[in-house]
Image (cartoon, rainbow, N blue to C red; front, side, top):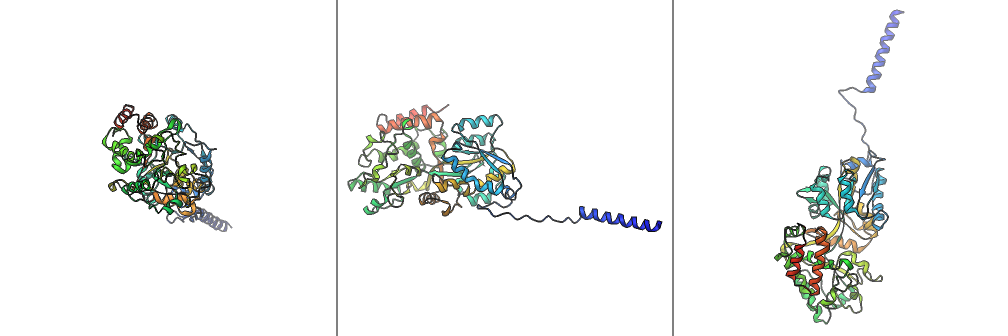
Length: 456
């Protein structure tokens, strides 16, 4: 009996040991865990990134905060919330937007106090660049592959987000400024052709004058901001008459206003503005005409003016009955010197990451997809910077048309006056360019006055 019990005990021990070993698994030959398939989502996902992990449920229940210059309950706030729904539903991550109108001042205070939001939506590249140089922003190249960024963005947009060699953010949405609007039905009836070069545009302007009309609708009155449309024209001409390096130096205060390059840019548009045969109401009407009213005569029958340069937001000032593609259309403001390619002046938003956590990386990856702009694309008001955006994402033919025009640009630059110090870009530049247009100051004197206000 003792021998039987001993054999039984040994057998029992062997059985127990085998169960334990089976549970633990042999160290030399581990068994791979089954691979979890990623659920289908309505946007592209970078392979192996944080967004892929988030969609598999790794970060469900976490929250990512986003700060920006619009408020959560205004039109842009609603469009932002709409744009985040697909991400939140796919990942279980909550996106908490905390923007406000005093964003420029508040973000500096928050970052300085060590209370930076996870992600910031920057409407001003200059502010973004300052945080990049201070080391507050995590470069996107640390967690998003070069191949993915190249797939999602035109090289010009990537350059736009690069500061001192550091690609620190991603472009989100924008408005295009280098556009010329015209009354399509009357235009087609008159047989006018879309100009491809600056010389073509000047020839068209003269042709319309010879036909007994004035070509251009121009107005720069905007209350305390009077003059800003003239600064936009100057920026467009800087991109077309000198190098990108000179444009960047000018914006940074390293190339003075009273330089041959800046003077040439202003004199280029002055050739049109100061010819009474070319502008509806003549030069004397430009300063007193509200910028939103200036394209109105284009819709008279027959048109009293035929051309208006402005960003795509200007359509909100067009008559409510006017239809895109029927009553009006647009074309690219032609290059002046072909040596500088086909640049595009824009205003838009850059997205950057301050706090490096996997769920924050996941949202940053989502921002590289056009679906992250879906609220604006469907409702109008902005264009996706992503070259992967397709026609079905857009709610209007107009916005899609602008996006396709911009896709052919060789370079991009942000509105220069928005990048300059406030006392210049939203101060002396507006004031002195208005005085110059009004004829109360000579160009050289105006430019010297602007230079004198640049902060030391």
